[in-house]
Figure 1 (tube, one colour):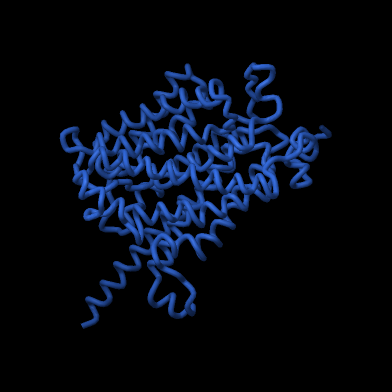
Figure 2 (cartoon, rainbow, N blue to C red):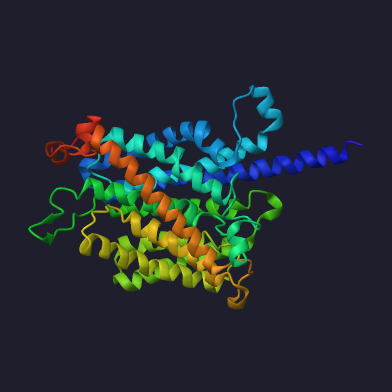
Length: 406
């Protein structure tokens, strides 16, 4: 008599554990963000880079619990602990998993505005976006509103299929990259980055730090993609294989285009992973390799275009890496996901284009308003003297290598 109940409990517990496994892997990615940024800045800004990511994580946890998750999914956790445990164990695990996605937003922005933003507006700005723009668009695609991703939504009615984003090429990465762009522009370039019309690239601090950060992100990404199945029965080996092939495609393409530049190679792997998220459940592995390779080229060329031609001082290249490659991933799902190109079908290119465009529009509008207000009120940027001294001493009163005299 108790067998069906016991089996149900085991399945439920398995699903909860699966989500927690994925959440922990994605949580570990934030160490990757921290070391990637710490390696990409100068010695005088390492402490700041390593401090911003966990602080953003803590703030994201609070605002996503109180505002973001309820906004996106209509689920709040304000009852008694007993009631939460009995009725919402899976929802609580799902909150943890999706919080890891939400906290990627300020981590992405952090890399673009590195070495020159004040601490308070950086934390406040990230919190506002995790509470508003991100969960609103998340809700449109995955959550309570579901007007873009639903099979019976207006995009499906208009073009034959809803907007498809399996693991967040657009919802997470494009959103984060396009949210970062207005902040980067409003801040302006670092002192000495462009002088008398000439571009003067600022050397990074540590390739080993950057490499460690990239490896942590690559490993954690399999929680990002595979665990997006959300339940054990839905796990797909195709998602894992596609993630591997896209990562390899991005790395190899970046290696060729950059002529063996190690910084571009490590970021090329990440570009491939960003781009494959959306269609990782419906594309063929060969298509995923192509999507990743195109993303690798986009990152290398996009980084040089943004920083050298447009003179946008995007320190880690978060706009091309997450913003542009994320948008490419959303569009690519509508191409290579088609059954005629070896995919599983159920996608429409026009829906992918529309959903991606809506994401970009929301990100640019909300970010411009948020950072514009912060600039007019408390200010965004360190003073020239503080920036020259470095954010480690001016913000945190400490150095990454305190035994050094200079």
